[in-house]
Image (cartoon, rainbow, N blue to C red):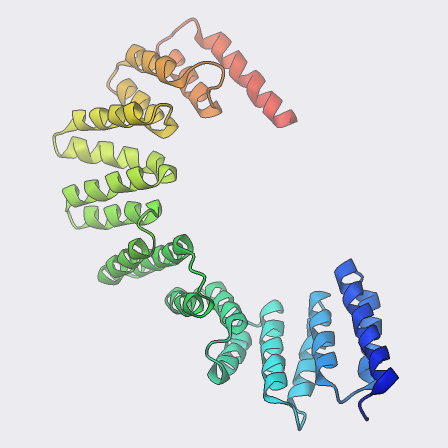
Length: 329
């Protein structure tokens, strides 16, 4: 069928615009009706069929989207760009439908023709992650970062750290160490990588190196500190340096007053040594007044109960009132 021109072309452009407005309005049924009429009137125009296939996928009609893309790929005369869009659309269909092996093969076909296609790389990456192909996913993520020029260091570190744990689970300790090293090169502030490096060092009997890794993790990433402190305490004890943990935690609180993870770790350490009153005094001094977090209030109740303090009951009642209020909020 001949392509429309003149006023017919203007009418077609208006119809495409109407379909776009319908998509933006979230009215996919109206958008489909408009695009289907256009595609029937101008069946040679591949871009209309490509748009229609993508609309089917957005509506969850994966089978229709796959069929439309496959029919397009059987056509003679598609431009190189149109063929690549159809191939990539088919790969996206397979991924959306959960056909991961077929999606992987389809993305590889797209990338064989254009290794720098960022959309195909992103789709390929998601498929590899869903299939648990962590090493390949990490390599593809690095390719995508180079192509897009938009690095996300913590995400890179997260992927390398996940790979390190997978390699370790498979018994490949050397590969795990290399992968966690890559994680820390990507983002030196990624605490979980420091924590895992400490575990790898501890496994090898290198307690001081493990201690160094856990300490650096707690210093660089506040979110990892709560997990790091018990490991640091146990390692100090094993090295005959039990008091070093207390000195370290007090140093953290001196430089960062109100650091909750350090405060809780210090109170638990003192309580474990039987110094419950000292733990309570430290908690009261460092946590302030009513602004204390729920975790601080829970710890205070534990300490009061451990000390058989008469204040334990009202503290528990206040804690329960607070929890009830949070649940109602």
